[in-house]
Structure formats: structure tokens, C-alpha cells
Length: 449
Image 1 (tube, rainbow, N blue to C red):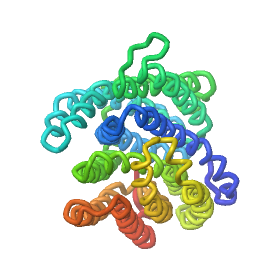
Image 2 (cartoon, rainbow, N blue to C red; image 1 turned 120 degrees about the vertical axis):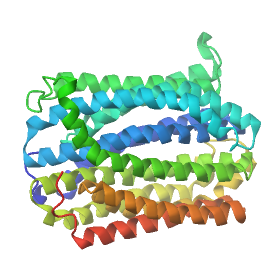
Image 3 (tube, rainbow, N blue to C red; image 1 turned 45 degrees about the vertical axis):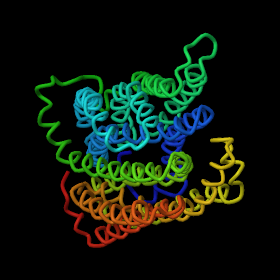
Image 4 (cartoon, helix red, strand yellow; image 1 turned 180 degrees about the horizontal axis):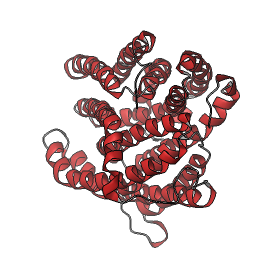
């Protein structure tokens, strides 16, 4: 994409760019959903432990993802400027650093996470299951971190088609291995929750292989300077350039996940059934999240491209078109939840008591998702302007409000699951309101990346 004329960014064009990202995110959520569906047949302890373990893993993964978002912003800016030869060195530098970061975080996870979890998890059975899950899950960082750098490249240059096929490879591998490794079919060992973690790692490896293969066979590597690599010592200036943007994004995303994890810890003290219900809600909420997150991700990249092309005045028109697509898309799935709650919940569990507990909270999920659709599109636009320090400040304010309400609603009042889940809505209101105020202020217009 050499120029960024809004006339070329019709709703149809936005949909064509967003659809592959949405499918890739959908498939990632389907992986979590299939894990929950399989483990729901094993037991409530395993189902709840998988939720805690997944959020712990997400806290580490999000650092690599945050680094890749910083690279994506710069790649999008260079793409908008037409400076294509600068993209390859940025990509290779980011990929090398992401592998180093994966090693450091995996080591930290093995050493620190058990020590952090022991005094915070109330149930000994849940604690043991979470530690088992993480033992097998942490090697996945070596698959996901390079993978998100490939994703940053393709989203940054507005060529998102491969993300669909990479996601399909990941999902099919995960489905097959979950059945084999969790229940021990066809001579494989019966690993239970460890099997779910190992299946996810191998599935992520399949997705990474698809990205590498597509890059080698279908991408114009000469155009983006992907046909040659600079020596590592020459890439320190590039790494500083990426980290100048990525560091604040990494902090912002890590903070968001840390606060989210504190919510799960608070719910865990309400009981194992409540924790299992929240895990089911988390998997259901991931579907509308997938829809509006895809539009938000593409929107952030397009904002960076627009500013790079000197057309930042088109930003608000772009956001309006994104929301015209994102809100109806999110609402379609939410309508299914409202109309067929029991049918959908039986995918995750066959226990009537757990279904009843979760069903009562589904309206809270619907309310949250509609607010989050607007908030995340606006917030990703802030990141797309390149001012990731402001994005971190907005995240700090939203997380502070979220932490206060979780304390009073979950810990002090010990409210029902539905009311606890509404805490996410307040977080989104603060996030979206502050993002809108910043974008309207126009202070992003002269931001250099």
C-alpha cells in the first residue's frame, strides 16, 4: 500500500483488510475454546486451573506482543512513507530480539511463577494443576514471539491474507492433539491438563511454520529488503528505535493483563465453581473481542499509514467507518448469546449447576462487549499515532479504576458472577473516554516515529 487515500479505504476495502485478521483471532479464540471444552469434560478444577494458567502465560506473551506492536507501528509508518527498504531490517531486528526475550521470559516463568502463585491461590488442587499447565505451556513463547513479529510485518504493510491460513494450521493441529494428548487416544499418554498445554505449543509451531513458508514463497522479499540480513551489531540503532515505541506498549499491555489476572485471583476465592464459570465467560467474551479487536488492530495500522502519508486529517473519517463495521459485527454474535445461552454453554460443560451460574452472567458480557467495541477502536488509534506513552497513561487510569471496583465488588461485596463481570465495562468506559479526548485534542499530529 503505497498511498493512503481515504477514497480507497471504503467499507469493502476495510473489510478485506480486517477479515483475515479477524479469522486469525477467531482461530486463536477457538483454540482456547477447544481447550476449555475438552478440559470441561475432565473436571471443574482443570477448567478453572486452565483459566489461571492461560492468564499467567498471557502475561508473559503480552510482552512479546507489545514489542511487536511497536514494530508494527513503525513498519506501518515506513509503508505509508513509501520507504519499503527500511522494513526488512526492522523485521529481522525485531525477530532476533523476540527470540531472546522469549528465552528470558520462559526462564523467569519457571523460576518466579510458582513462588508467586503458591501464596495467592486458595485451592491446593487448583494450584497443582496451574503449575503443571505452565510447565508444559511456557516453551510456546519460542513459537509465539517470532509469530507475532511476522504478524506485525503483514499487518504493517496491509497484506493480511496469510494470517487466515496460519490460523487454520494452528487450529487444526490443536484440535487433533487435544483429543490425543488430553484423553490418551490411539496409544498416546493420557496427560490431562498437561496435554492441553503441550497441544497448544505444538499448534503454535504449526502456525509459525505456515508464516515462514508463505514469506519465502509469496512475499516480494526484494521490495521489503527481506532478501538480506544485517549483522546483529549493526541493528542496535534499529532496536533502540523499536524499543522507543514498544517499551511503553509492552508496559501498557502487561499492566492490563496483570490487572486482569488479579480479577481471576479474586474470583478464585469465591469458589471453584465461580472460577470455572468465569473461565467459560472468558472464552465466550473472546468471540466479540475477536471481532472488535480485528477492526481495532487494522485501524491502528491504518492510522500509522495515514500519518506516514501525511494524511492524518482523515483519521476521524476512518474511525467512523471502522465503527460502522465493528458494532454490527459484534452485535451479531451477542444476539446468538442472548437467544441460545444453554445451547452455547453446553459446549463447555454438561454440569447443570455450572450452566446456571454462567447463564445468569451472560447479559453482563453483552453490555461489556458493546462498550469495548468503541473503546478498543479508539484506544488502538491512539497507539497508531505512535504516542505509546500516552497510551500507557490511559491504561494506567483505566486499570486504577478497574482495580478499585474489583476490590469493592468482588473482594468486599463477594457479588454474583454477573455483577463481577460488569467491572470490565467500567474499565472500557475509562479507556474509550480518555482515548477520545486525546484524539480530539490533536496533540498527536506532529508526533515523529
